[in-house]
Length: 137
Image 1 (cartoon, one colour):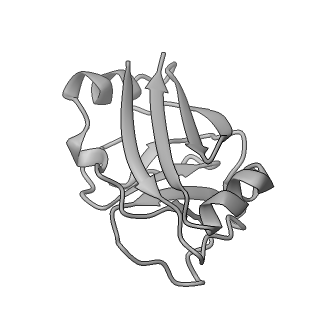
Image 2 (tube, helix red, strand yellow):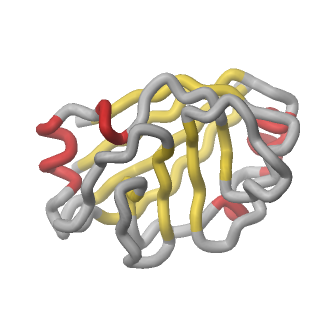
Image 3 (cartoon, helix red, strand yellow):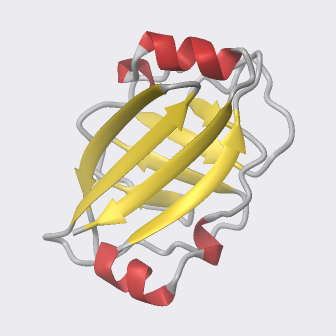
């Protein structure tokens, strides 16, 4: 099962955060948002299919977050958690930790924003259109 989000980069994308990465529906980004990879997302966790959400709530689930922009692609894998809510209407956040809130879409990610391919980050900083695919197995 998968969910697809369309978004775009922004000049303030730096992807320097050490424990999270994020895609937001917000139409702006300040330099402080160093975990944000893309803005103006057309969907948020609250929009995801209930069957997808249920699958992600399995502690044994493998969740993969993939982002593609301007011919560059990166994916990171983490795990599901029974506490995942998928109720936030603005932001989808991946975490290297076990922390869960209404924005969390994956826990135990192999890396955070700082681990994303720098050519991809540069494309996002140039405002490239982005496609995010979140899949669960």
